[in-house]
Length: 320
Image 1 (tube, rainbow, N blue to C red):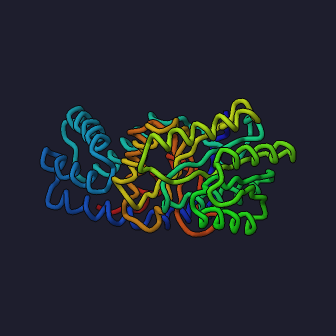
Image 2 (cartoon, rainbow, N blue to C red):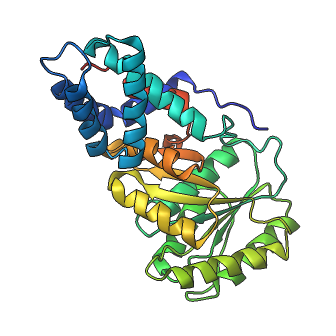
Image 3 (tube, rainbow, N blue to C red):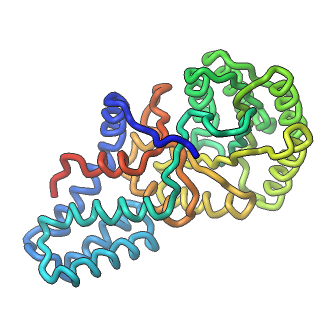
């Protein structure tokens, strides 16, 4: 069992800043939705439903939240709009807690078998390679020996970018020539990592989704080859999603879940968008732990996702 991740004041500050656009967009919509109303009635709930959907929380998750609020309003008989923010906060927090384990190791390997092998998947452009680079930085900072595998061999830029990150962070990157078999790269990476007593191995994979059958076959082959070196590899299959794409991120999660078993997610680029509600919807709909969120360009701006801190930050000083 991993330790519960506690945020430092600096990380909380960065999280608050990273969610500013989401907070401003959401609560400005909410303020308009309840303008002139004193009691939470059907009109207010209809307006709240629209606010949640247009904030990319997703239809199914929105309906769950509205149903919970309806039950609470019915039970309490008379609920004012001034109480709505607190009720909404409670229900979102409860929903996130119910749908995920409370454990997030962050960048600790406490209780995990080493080398801990992470296979990273996701379409091109979501920040996959950058996320891998930042993960490598954080793991190395925590005192671990990290190896990276450049198994996205279909794009020269992907390999080059990972090599640059490896040099920047100071961790080895195993690569082959352009167009090489991705499974062969993964095999070489694990072989080298095991021989050199690495603690963490992160494998980048191709970001193609136009043909799910090919993608499925490729990822399955990579997994099978890795098992020849480490029988229970990979220990984590992490899907990287771009939070700024809103509903498109839902579709990507759906398609990748069909192509391979996803065990965790990282949601990037939340600082540049008002669509941070996507974190709530994706957590709820896919029942897959959100491991990290990206809230800025800096190395420290890839943060372990802490549901309590996320909700606290989203509702902090909010006016509606």
